[in-house]
Length: 189
Image (cartoon, rainbow, N blue to C red; front, side):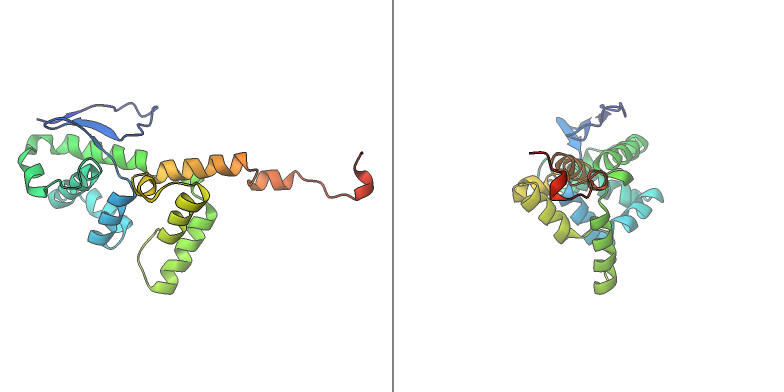
């Protein structure tokens, strides 16, 4: 039996979409899950396309990957035995919501991360949409996360923290636009 809770879109759940299988678990797509999706489908975008096409295999795989943060030793076949086909529509909705809450909003995505990803893909003939090196650097060096914290973090959380970091450290472009040029004689002592 599967019970899905935590569906209020106004309050983005940080732990993921709550579900009850044998016990309470959360469906969440952190960076570990996204790497698994990228390995399987070649890119996150291709994985999303397969999921949107509604294939049973894609739905079950995304469900499995979304639960890996709960237990790295989750066995796919054991998970399948807990799922009833009558619950597939609800599982698909939960996957969609969990992906929505995991991914950054478009305005949150940093231009540098997007530009670096495009250059990285073009240079390496890689279909990857994510510049993993930049994201890892951002998380571990700039935001001072441990490696474990980074990999268990969702992209939405990482980009939200980055936006706050830029605001606190006055790194936003809007702050730079408000500065006036002047001479030393203009400074009041």
